[in-house]
Image (tube, rainbow, N blue to C red; front, side, top):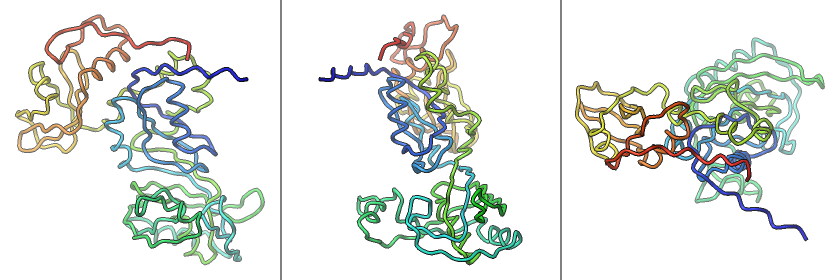
Length: 342
């Protein structure tokens, strides 16, 4: 008989891990693996990548999950390979071949077709997607052989660079580089481009190279994460406020920090701002996000005092000062447990 597997002792972990998602795993598979490796209590990802897609996937832990929507809403950039002449059921290499057509296109035709798909466009979501209808994912209908009506969605293609190329098999293809708004289906974009060329096509490769200010160059692989010690894994985490880059910064004194964390609006000589990162002055600690309207600082998403204490403890290197206890006392921060055993 196999010995029972030891339970993982979970712990509070706060921050953002930029992972280079490998081929063949779902976003949730990767999330659960990273969560296990970090022994994190709470985690979430910031937008699904198909199993056949690779690339940068920000994973949020602890307090960072409160701001994950910012990444869901952010622009994203992809590199893709569009195989011309063959249409599949899924729009990628996973699907069955539906139709084959000859390919007779020129680089100029490819560039002109790309121009037609640059800017604001409408897309009909593919049946093989996680989008839900009546509480059920579209791919579940597709697997049952059922096609349901889908409403078109408006998206923005900010940049679409294309180059006509040949694959190793000497099959014609287009190498695409796309920067787009949230909700864009690159498979659908590729299919629409190929249809404009009159030959059809499907994606054979898809890689996300940037999302919301984070780039692939910052990401680590799952294999690299597995090879690290627990201390090194935690060191890979970006701080929670990495998700708030570009926000207007407002710092509050101790009294106003406590009131802000209670959900109370604060008044000051601030210009209107739609996105604000709010910090305590001493010691510097992220309190949450807000917006300013008419001189009022209005809370949006707040950290709780325990999350602030834990985040400070996790990230401090040489801080010897006590952290403000936002319940009204001072307390020495407690470092996170970094046992080498799972």
